[in-house]
Image (cartoon, rainbow over all chains, first blue to last red; front, side, top):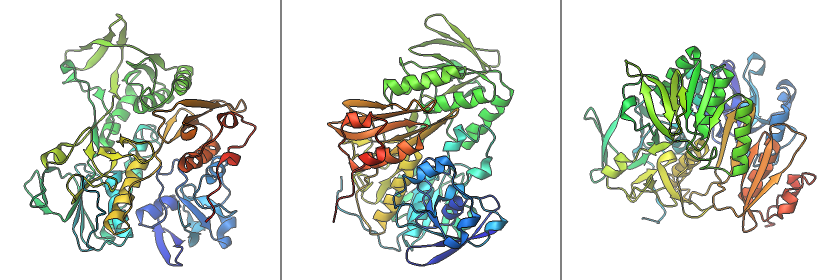
Length: 106
Length: 423
């Protein structure tokens, strides 16, 4: 299991145990993390699973593909250099403890 | 129709009939919005609620299994005190006594009821196919599993219907090396949902990939073997089409029987008001079955799509927990066929101007905008996620854009998106 920490706008932190190779989006949806929608189920079609990766983790999650970069333009809240679509972040042992910030809107 | 904003005490028992995307998302959204009362979700399939879009895509290709489709785990529902009844069929709704009756006689009382009953695929009406074990429609994981088995053994498949399901099936089958003939009664593909230019784009794509497409055809008769299985069919022009199995993708029939039995207003779907409330104020309807007043496009809409089901689920949960607003979501759709991802935002019905935005730098890509009275109401975008990103913003903003600018690929779409109004 990989622990993912979702930080809400309120500052509340929600700890979720994600399965091996489960995506950060699916772990959020499955565990009722409010604010991450994932309408397309991870097909890189909708841009409704936007998160800001915590600065301390930014170097460990890799970089977005060109298609993900393009879809990041569609997110509801202005993206930053830490923006990712969480359907593209697969859980693994190296990401145990990963902290992501949930945006105000999807 | 009741138009007054509804409000639900937090101790109410909410019963959800239908355990698909809409049902599961509504249950989850109710809990996330702080609903305290009991929630019961009733579904007739053996599985926990799962994602259907991959059924005609990744699941058929074997890239994801049934477990990978599950939306939320059993533990999650349990942790959030959501009761799920699987393989349970609701036989009637008693709106006077406010309970539903299951077909084993169990009575489940409700304070508020959400009908998320979805639809069933329209099947071919031909009685000669009634015993055929190689004729399929696609809606459930079970359907997809059966089709997957046939795809792995078959050489030739015939698809009836040139809509999204038919085209996605054709794409998967070709990718697996199966010969495909696709029959469509209309003179073009996707005729119900898109413009001729996009229809042509997909015809070309499928023909390039070896799909034999027959448009504007009528089926004269089906021929079955001794066991009653489909063997071939004849078109009215005399052409014979043989195949190992047949798939019909000819539309969805909304499951409105329970609503009718409960005396709710039904007309090609369960009629709801802007709060997604049926003609009975204690009963709501969402997802593929709900026909709602469309704030974006006018008139009534009933959309068969996951984003719509999901957005309505979230809206109904908010409405039931006090954050009451009319449903007003920009619809969007997607489809994967071969190496083309189609993304659609808005509904193009009633457009009076069509703009093709050319981009010679990309193969198998097209971006088409639809305008009505100068307003961008919809866009069909193939293989250009960046265009889709901005098209979504243009449609959501109801932007008025000069069509010459939209057609000029040298002008970035980003520059055409109106800035949010200053407060």
